[in-house]
Amino acid sequence: MNIIYFLVIALFLFFIGLFIASQIVRVNHEEAERLNNLIDAKRSELAKLEKEIQAKTLDRTTALNQPSLNVLNMYDKTGIKIPIDIIEELGYLNLSNEQDVLAYIENQRQFWKLECTKKPFKQFDEII
Image 1 (cartoon, rainbow, N blue to C red):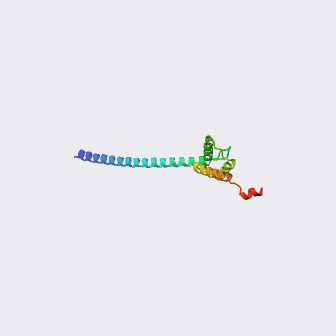
Image 2 (spheres, rainbow, N blue to C red):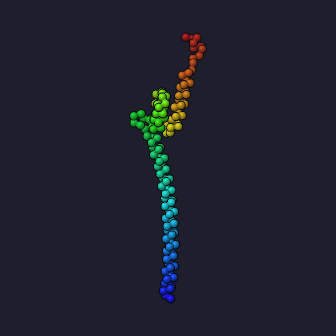
Image 3 (tube, rainbow, N blue to C red):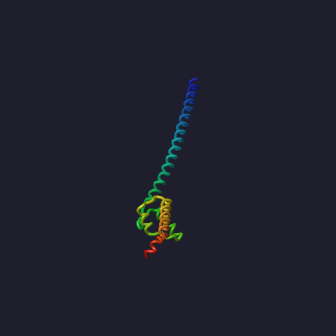
């Protein structure tokens, strides 16, 4: 009879041990999943920060950031000449993404196009 009690107690302890082990494995699995999600979030944050650093880093020869250089290279490949005063102003503005640089250059090109197409008044012709 003692052996039967011993076997019942041993079997009961075995099942309790299995239950505890399964709970530990489940908790470890949940912890691993949480840590994997945290790692993914940190990697995406790191990629974002690296992109921002790259955008703010200045080229030593031109003193322009990478987005400005990319847009100027695009204009160069298409054969469009950009006035030097616009390029110089890009160095002071330090725009951080290509869309802003492109919008600024196009705005300045439009302004200078309108400025250069102005004609003097007729009265000016009479004075001369």
